[in-house]
Every structure is written in C-alpha cells, then in structure tokens.
Amino acid sequence: MASCRTRGTRSAGWRHYTDLPRVAAFLASLADDDRRLYAAIDASLSQLDATLPARLARSSREQAMDAARADFGAAATRLASDAVRARDLRLLRAAATAPCLSAPLQLGLLAPPWLRWRELAPAEAARALAASLDATRAGRAHALAQRVCREVSVRRGRARGGARRVAALAAAGEAALGGEEVRRLRRGEAVVLEPRWLRAEQLRVAEAELRAHVRRAGRPSDSSCNAGARSCALPLLGEGYELSECTRELLRRLCGVPALVEQHGWPRPLCVPPLLQLATYAGGAHYTKHLDSNEWEQANWREITILLYLNDGWDAARHGGCLRVYPPEGGQARDVEPISGRLVLFQSRHVPHEVLPCTQGAERLAVTLWVEYAEEQ
Ligand SMILES: O=C(O)CCC(=O)C(=O)O
Ligand SMILES: [Fe+2]
Image (cartoon, rainbow, N blue to C red; front, side, top):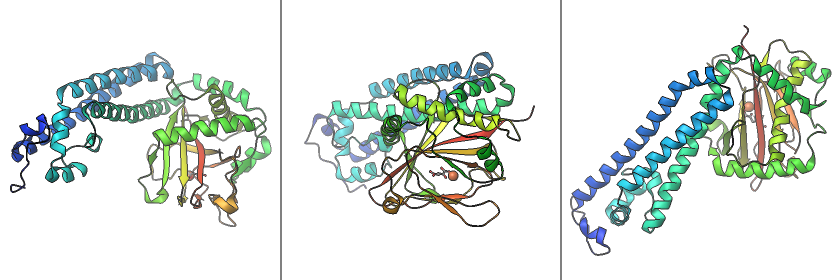
C-alpha cells in the first residue's frame, strides 16, 4: 500500500487527498461512522424492545406495533439525516476512484456495501445513501414486526381477545373445509383444497401484488436447504405494505381457515400469528425434505402449515416445483402441483415435505401461514 500513491488532478476533493495514508485514515473513519450508525440503530431497537412488553400490556397489538414503527421510523430518519450531513460525498467519491482503494471499497472492506456510490454524482450519491438507509429501515421494520408478533405469540395464552378475532375472520372462510378434511388433517394427512371463495380475479390481483412485494422486500435464503428461494415476512397489522383491499381481503380469508379447523375439533387451542411468509422459487430453486417444526427447536410453536399457491398458468410437467408430501408413518409420497388458488394443510411437526426444483424461467409463489398452538392456561 505504501508505494501506491494517489494523484490529485480530477476534482477539488481529489486534490485534498494526495496523501494515501490520509485517504485510508479518512475512509477508516467513515467505516467507523457506519459502525456508529448501525450501533445507534441497534440501540434504538433495543430501547423499543424494552418498551414493547409494557406497550402490549396497555394497548392492542395493532396499536403497539404502530407505535413501535412510528418511534423507529423517527429514530431512523434522525440517524439518516445526521449521517448525510456529516459526510462530504464529493470527497468520498473522489477517494473511491483511486485504483488502489476501489478494490477494498468494492469488497466492502473500507465501507459497507451500501456506500457503493463510486460512479455517482454527489446528488445521486446522497440519494443512493438515503435509499440504502431506507432499505435498512425497511429491513429493520420487518425485524421489528416479527418481534412484535413473537411477543404477541408469547403472550397469546393470556390474550382472550384473540379467539374472537379469529372467529370474526373465519366468517369469511365459509365452507372452505369440513369435518372430513379436519379428521384427515388430525390423522397426519396433507389436505389439498381449491375453495370456491378464492375467486380467479382476486387471485390474479393478489399474485401480481405479492410477487412485486417479494421482488422488493424478499431476501435470498442463506440456507443450503432452499438455496435460490427468496422470502419475506408479511405482517398483517398496520399499513405500509401497499397491498390493495382486494389482496388484503384474500389474506384475511386465508387467516380465517384455522378457526374452521378449531370449529371441527382440534386437540388443543390454536393461535394465528399476524404474520405470513411469502416465498418465491426460481431457476432450479428447491427446498429439501424437512419438517416445519422440530422437537429440538426452541420457541417454535407451529402446529399446522397452511400454504396458498399463486401461480397462474402453472404446469408442473413444464415448470416443476411440486410440493412432495410424505406420510408421517412412511409409505407412498404424494406430489401436489402448486396451482393458483390451491390450499394445502398439514401438521407442521409430523408431515415431512419438500419443494421439487423449478425449471429455468418459472417463478413459483407460495403464501404460508403457520398456525401455532396456544399454551394451555
Ligand atoms: O412452498 C411450499 O410448497 C412449501 C415451502 C416450505 O416447505 C417452507 O417454507 O417451509
Ligand atoms: Fe416447509
């Protein structure tokens, strides 16, 4: 590094940094800034975490989540504007064009990846920084929503209002499934349904919106079990997910299904977390054989997995992507095509399943609701 010298010719900022050690020190101080920024974000999240239980005790979970989001949004906005103010982006841009610095910069060694504004003009760089902070904030908001949902789940046994809410949602579920299906579910079978209340037009609208949502907010899986899958959590409370009323209604109906299961008799009380998972599988992605809940896992209360597929025109012969379900006691596996409007239910702890590879060019979308069991009082 010592033999690598920068030359100050291209811009005013560049000229200030003809001395490489100073550039390196300057960039190192920026990396420190970033660490401070993230530390500050973490601190504000911890503070929210600490206040969450008291909030939940005082208000409904909708109000608690909205308040937590608003607090976090305000804290993140403050942090972002401080960060933008504290930086001279013109200087940063100049430093980044030094050949001996650009490689470590690109590798994220001198600054986190969201500072890759190398090719950008200062105004664009500022916008890029603000956008990446927004993305950070959105990611954190998801994490926060999940924490709220988890808190609610932990307290679920004590929240009697929950049952009424589920019952209200179930009214929309109509005769999605009857006693015979629930008996099969109890015996450990996978139940496959195409309920009439999932109308074709509504499915198409929901499919387009939810696919766009995964594209925006989804994260690639970091597990080798389902490499290539992209997923995101979709909290059902609060606003800000830009879903139409049409899609929201469909999701409400989906959340009504567990109440029908209870109505026909389930051995223990169920609880519906206000959270769905959206996942896409494209270009060879698959999910190896697994259970959705295992004895050795802590804090996994999944009881019934409910899948809704939204894949207009899906043809398993061409696109692959079937769900393969195995009987808990062994025997012949069954392949289920992920066609639009199809619901699949099975017991999360007992039914092994896998997603078979999807072919190139096909993108398979599934919405998952993991129904939990409620603690006995
Ligand atoms: O999408 C599917 O059909 C199943 C996905 C799955 O098994 C999971 O997310 O745990
Ligand atoms: Fe699964």
